[in-house]
Length: 114
Length: 111
Image (tube, rainbow over all chains, first blue to last red; front, top):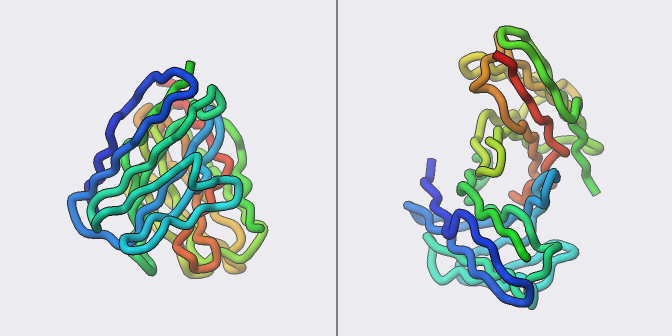
């Protein structure tokens, strides 16, 4: 399975600032996904990032708050903009290998907003 | 919209004991995935189930999908402290490759 590296692994940020999270894969993949895991909660899909097209966002998530880039088949970034304490979560990227294959996840970015 | 409900929410067992975690879907499952998450870290893929009645095993963990494809169980035999973590079931939303996840089960194994 693909090896997925996320950076940073954790960060503490001031409210009102923005942070960009990077996701690097060791092989070319078509589908990449970004999830949020709020404290004590399960994972919620933020958006799907496919190379060559705009990211598609799930209900409740907007591009202005969570802009995503997907410049090539091995890399994606998620920016958390104008952060507030409610954005304190673990953010995870995953890659999908297609039909009948499971998604594989990075180690996540633990974000705390003061 | 489809929802996944896991039970129990948390579990504390003595080392060596068997345990079962359940995942129930509000709709027919196209694919059911079990993951383990160490606290605050990424998800580790355990098993994938697609066919009604399917059962898979890896080391001491067995997962089953019922015939109606609306419920799955994860069974751990002779639990060890290394099994501790959060177990999450995930499902493909109607063949979209997008996943929804269950509420999670926190497992603690006492040595």
